[in-house]
Length: 454
Image (cartoon, rainbow, N blue to C red):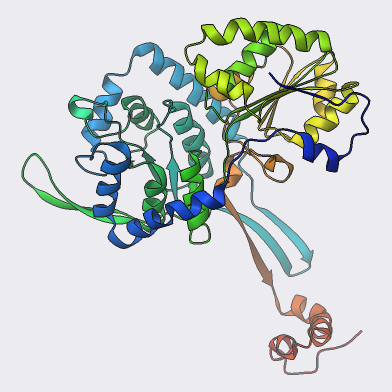
């Protein structure tokens, strides 16, 4: 891996932003490229989705909505060990996310005057599950569980159709994705991927299909209010184009891991963890921040052995040698904490002495993994935490997916006559100060006598 040596340097947030590695990820250019795709789906619906599926995925689904029988077939053939692992992942995720649900709070401002913050779930959500370089049933779990915990009443999942599928699954998403949806009780699943899937969720469509019994019916995909889930740059670009019409969780970039380590860290652990994220994508970022040159050297040795032996060795090598990945040498752990806070990694591991105390000093990260027994891959699958996290430094202002992502806070204001009378003069004064007399008159019109002033 390439190195950046910051030892002896005067570090500041401004200078660190200039030198820390980032993947090149031009969403604006991609948005212009996919704009015709999004507009085509908006105007032509199902016909456009079928043509785009053939063009980009090399297969046309028998119908865009996956039939219930196909979902059940996927669940029936799910390998028992994988089913058990998914069920445990679901159980742990539900345990953690159930505790995130906010309670309504009523504040008595004055006698007869209250403000209640009421938490209401989004009415309909579209969840995107990638299907490119890898299969991600874990993404189904991470998107569906918090939405269900929030009380979302209508969930639609979409994932790209796979041309390698055969038999009953021909033209539909990966069977493991379908089985995971069935495990979670999601029965509205679509065979659509990429930018066209995001447009489908935002605009909806109608499709007339004829079943094996000869009965013709019209299937309707209603537009959603919120779209969540990670995906390629084309998915991210399409999210940008429909944002405003619908809400989105984030503009997700390539995955990232940063490891803050001192000389107590096991170089084999560090190398294995850097590889684990690099195998996602050639643009994946793996960053080691350390005050130990000896550890950095040992990690390089471990990587030189591990990468050629890895199943996705070429993809990993490209990611680890790309401009987005780096070993960053610092004078001490104080400097390391500053570097990690400015970098604001999607995933941050702390492999140092007293790792808990160091972790408590971190302000910016999508998720923090503390100590040698908390690797990022645990969080990817079975820690109970959510793996849909902010990337590209957006952890400085954004959070990962949670129950709160699917809730809206609504203030409910309830004042009686006496409570309004008691504050009316302040409302009038403020309305006059802003030259909006109608605001004040909307209050005074409710009283037959003159509103008292202090």
